[in-house]
Amino acid sequence: MTDETVIARPPAGAALPARVLFRHRVRVGAIALLAAVAYAVLGLVKLATFRATTFDLVIVDQAVRNYARFRPPYVPVLGVFHERGTDYLQLADHFSPIYALLAPFYWVHDGPETLIVAQALLFAGAIPFLWLFTRRVLGAGPAYLVAVAYALSWPIAQAVAFDAHEVMFVPLLTAIMIERYHAGRVLPAFLAMLGLLLVKEDMGLLVIGAGLYLFVVGDRLRGLVCALVGAGAVVLVRGLLITSFGGDSKDFWAYGHLGPDAPAALLAMLRDPLAALLLPFSDEAKVDTLFLLAWPTLLLCLLSPLSLAALPHVLERLLSDRPQWWQADFQYSAFTVMILFCAGVDGLARLLRWTGRADRQGLKLAWAAAACAVALTLVPRFALDQLYHPAFYKEDKAAAAAEAVSRVPSGVTVEAVNSVGPALSSRTTVLLWSAAPRGAPWIVADTARWEFPFGSADDQRNRVEQLQTEGYTKVFERDGYVVLRRD
Figure 1 (cartoon, rainbow, N blue to C red):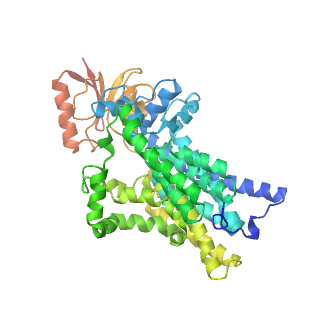
Figure 2: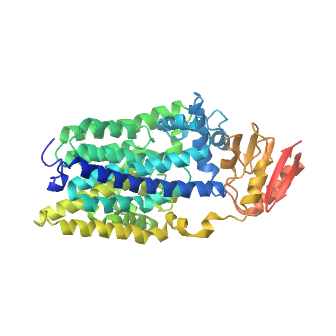
Figure 3: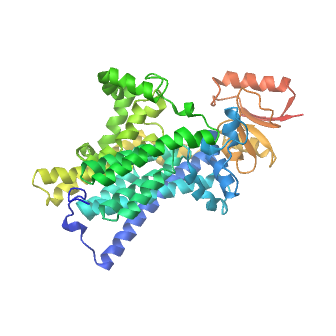
């Protein structure tokens, strides 16, 4: 490990007396606990008020439940939707074997509530490692403020507000990877890096990015190995493993505007490099997302080579033809939020060294306070804003939805409207209600408000009428919710 690899450690990083260390642990633990409670409340309220969704909460729930019962991670809700059968494996959709780690929690409580709480704990679990990294670089005071800024950050807010996803593991793993490497503990850092490869099929891009960072700061051999491992993982998982599990590699190709496959896309970018360079800035939503990613650190993450670790994944999003990947509304930015916070801390340390002010603790504290203030100003724009509005805890149609759910017996297969599926997932086999005939003996529909994947509420009403002509009997109707049973 070269001198350039590890950021110069100020006196604040020195060993602390046991009593002081205990107080820090209590305070950091309190921040993490409060964050976990806030995240869990956000997700559990949405579930209880029928604002969680079958796509994707039921998908993950079915996979983890099968792991807990020592079965392959079948996700019938997704397999039937894609017309690939009820024995469709979650690993064929996204390569996320890390979900198996959640299986023991289903032995305590079997239901999507477990996923929401586990996700909250995992996101909050990254806070102590971010605090350790920041304390070592900037001091204890700034470390607390940066920890709070992460806890309030908009990428985490958007992730916890949208069901449960594999991204729940990434901030913790990247925090361990960065903090442990910075502390000179290479083995746990690289184990965390390898853990990323079990999260999703594109996490090899983060490993490639980590390799770029190591190479730039002088740890060239390890950097080269990481980049090769990351690239090999992407090729192996997407080209072999996912297809062997029954998936289709075409499902992941989101660059049709560049070419039908990776070689064609690379050739297209080489033919017109200027257009390729401008593509990440070709839409207002892309520019907004880029700015929102860097602004929580007051743009100082751009001064750190650590940002290179996030670059491949960010480019994967912005070069694609899928607008939901560009936007700040979903969970995708949570994949890189921890890297960018650590890069902001590193960027400030580098800026202070370059300007000869490395010992100015007041400047470090001012930047951390500003980063915390930015996080606070962004709260009203994103999902955590809901927590302090009384209307969030109320849903006028929740009682009707709950009654509709109660009419469905346990152990059956049911086609459920997108917002109702999570309430049935723990005791039935849930399929997503759509216009395609599935033949399930029970159906829970909503005719009052639009639900994915229908085009409109009118389409939903028409589908209910069509089902009644096909032999289904209406056994319940209230506030737009309709329960049908096949005779």
